[in-house]
Length: 281
Image (cartoon, rainbow, N blue to C red; front, side, top):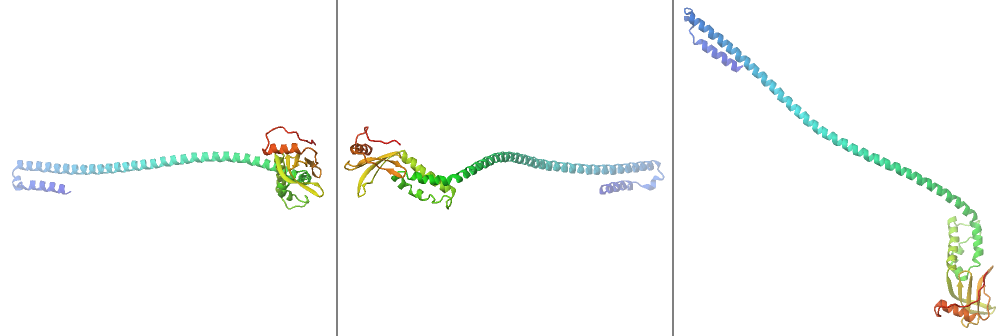
């Protein structure tokens, strides 16, 4: 509007330069004046229209620039959100894969656990059945074990006395658990088996008569038999298990050969075959 005002003022100034009074008497000047007035008005209108068009163009250009900025910002924001969504999708996909693998492992473990549980249950039932069998027979085994102990050699009995003392006097009335009772019997049999697979030499006393006892060396041949001889070789013989304990019959003339046998065993004699008396039950 200031620009348009300046234009109109210029036109007014241009018109004011003409002397209006003479125009009434001079047609040519009047025509020239009117022409100038028309051209000035047309020029002013054209200038005003051009000014409006330029302003409209500026407004449209400003809106276009603003739209481009908004579009660019929206596109940038979308790229950021798209990247976040892609990362989230990747994270969730990995988590889903991990959970599926964990589930498969748990299912496999559950199957293995069920199989192991079934196996353990079956074994428990077998142990329970075996326990009932042992419990029903343990008393009779303890009675038989007491009878067997009578036939064991004295060195072995002395070694297993702690186990022997744990055998109940009355199998039907005792405070030991089934496991402890079985352990006693197994311990006695284990020591007896070990003694039976070795040769054992001991020094002990042997009663010859009611009023005579001599010191002898005894060589046990497992649980089967034994040889004994005194230091002079005069008193010698063999031993073997009997119904009420070991029996020790004296064998005349066996002293030298039994002394030689003991010498070979103890390393005092060369290794050689030695003829000694024997008894086979």
